[in-house]
Image 1 (cartoon, rainbow, N blue to C red):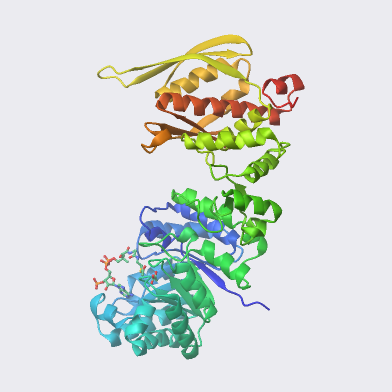
Image 2 (cartoon, rainbow, N blue to C red):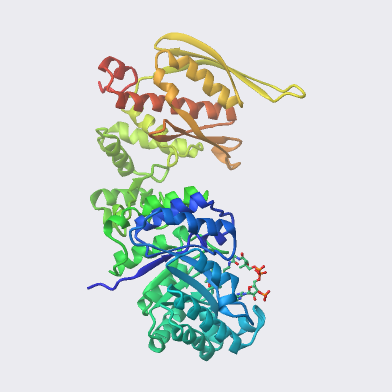
Length: 539
Ligand SMILES: CC(=O)SCCNC(=O)CCNC(=O)[C@H](O)C(C)(C)COP(=O)(O)OP(=O)(O)OC[C@H]1O[C@@H](n2cnc3c(N)ncnc32)[C@H](O)[C@@H]1OP(=O)(O)O
Ligand SMILES: CC(=O)C(=O)O
């Protein structure tokens, strides 16, 4: 049988110590439910001795029912020179009515002298009294040995003596903390092995990421005998963050065959990582291992050619195991294989030996040279591909547009656009206002199209990015505009490049609308005549 590893999630406590992260009680409750669904054993919800928000979380979380996760309250050992039963922080833990508590105490003699300014003997008593107090009150106790590895390296006898106090007082777990994140994997491994020889209580690991070793150190600790791993979703946490559970869990389960969570739960990893990043309002790096959108994205033509034959040529696992998916990017580094893959995705019948394919690759490479970027503009690429194969009818063509931006003192800036387009051979023009010139253009173009295509009103522009391109060769003086659009079910991205920001925006805007009409008619099951009008019917 495989060894079981318990996951202790501290996203809601140590995760919120990360710069830029602040979670409301509602946010914490939502994340807690996702963590339970993911299969973690402990959810450290906050520090009731610290603030009322955390107290409210512990009160409201009781209305939820969890499958297996134990809601855990955090705190420190009693203050020096006091009694545990009189310590407000320990009493808050009892008052919020949790089944488990994690309390941290000092392991490093330097911290005892400098940070809490007491004697080594008093610190030992603080640890014993605090764990004993919580145990006597019926809680499961996880004792977090703060700075354990640094403490062990300077005074191993004392560091061991601190956790022996926790063990003698009945701690259920002793989590060894690399609080400053400065320890290396081989040191973690040696020290955890030694601790396991000296302590009967199960050992946990709590690593920080200051040397970018949070994940490696957690794994080294497990391989040396630790049976609980503490960490956070996406590695959020104080300074450089905590050990990232989103990488630790699949590493332990898929590479080392530990029992951590079920395979169904593992398949929810990507969506939970993205959900937490949304709620925390933190950008999710595209190259985040396992769960980032680029984690299984292939760009180089050589790679794509090989994965078409067998994905494992350039993928270390099947992306679906962690709920992610394979993607292929098209850029100036693409060969025919990239386009073949894209064509298969789009259901287009592509012939690699075809002259049109070769021309399309050349066109894409030239456009990338001019400053276009297709890897972030899937919809523009699709339109280009359909067009290259004669599968896209021009729905509308521009005759002219005019933009006026007026600023009168004491009034907000007013943007107006007049757009004249030809829709199915008929000239249509409309004027519209907007909160900026691009918004005004968007509104005016929509008005021109809505009579023939009422569905255009269901889409909206979700994001607009401008990038000034490097001042060299073909891209000198140009800007690239990326527009992300959405119709509440799907989202798509388009790109435009020009010396003029309005012109670049217009290109991206037009592609966005053309793509919207294309996908609407794809899903609307319209009569063939109408589908033909948006270029869906192959001739
Ligand atoms: C490694 C970690 O991540 S530990 C968690 C760190 N997280 C946080 O600090 C976030 C929440 N913290 C807080 O809200 C506040 O710091 C509180 C409410 C806990 C304490 O606030 P204050 O009473 O104002 O104390 P303050 O934060 O200034 O100083 C820390 C105090 O805790 C004491 N202390 C620190 N660690 C310990 C410990 N393990 N056991 C007992 N006391 C400790 C210090 O000695 C100091 O007390 P002193 O000034 O009497 O010597
Ligand atoms: C307990 C804790 O958060 C630490 O030592 O890093």
